[in-house]
Length: 348
Image (tube, rainbow, N blue to C red; front, side, top):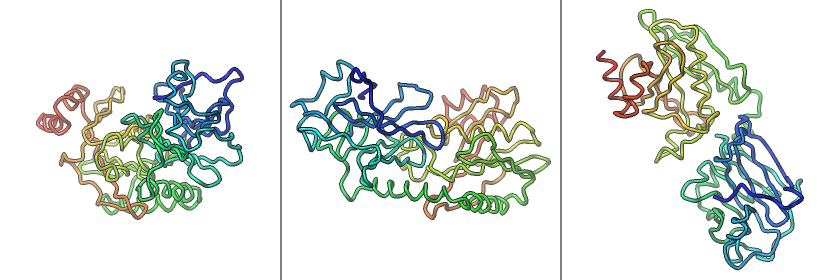
């Protein structure tokens, strides 16, 4: 992939810089006097996850792919046959530029005067694709032209705009929360406790406790399904079916530490950029028998999951079960599959 690059002697000129609402990624539009690139990096500055898409040349384009710049650690120009303006364009003004995040926080779109200029999607880095640019004519330096007008990507970009507009309204979260809580109570009866996550403002999350059978407890997350889960496109063949998720867990008795642990698991996708899915396992490192999980969509044991629910008028929530398991069963799940490990655990 292109980057990271050494800029000219005066250093890079940052045209625009913005952190995503989750506080986990930062997007930067930079000029080095020769090119303009859009970068996306984790806020922990792990350069192994840096993504970069070319936006425009400011200098005349070379006739061939710019391998010399890459050899020198500089941002490559797109070659003449790959860009619309081989003589170069002027540097855009800061006031012309806006960034709109994909709702999962792992992709971003650059707009110039309301028009799409470049896209770093959540699947950036897959199959040598970094992103899309308006000024690109052919693939070069990981950048490809914007897709044709019939592409489903444009519907996704419109959805991003609508998503952030809705989430900015103060009434959105209470309405979402109350509807999902009422849905849970249809399955489990009145809730016993509602634990709101207080140490992060976004995404808003909670864990709700319900009475289970024989003195046990059922715990469910509330808020994960209010936005797309990151990393889904990298794992699922049909990502749209896996974008909205909540977690259901059960314990034999009330546990003071369990709601905090489940909240920690619920935050994991947004902190890591990686999706939770059927067959995954989670080792909390806590010294409790019920503090490690195997996740399963298909293993049918224990209390029922809530009925299907549609959110944002389009996405069905997947209720992913978190089964408590001793640590030695996590290795079995990773090598033999989650359901095999859970059957073995059930048999004692």
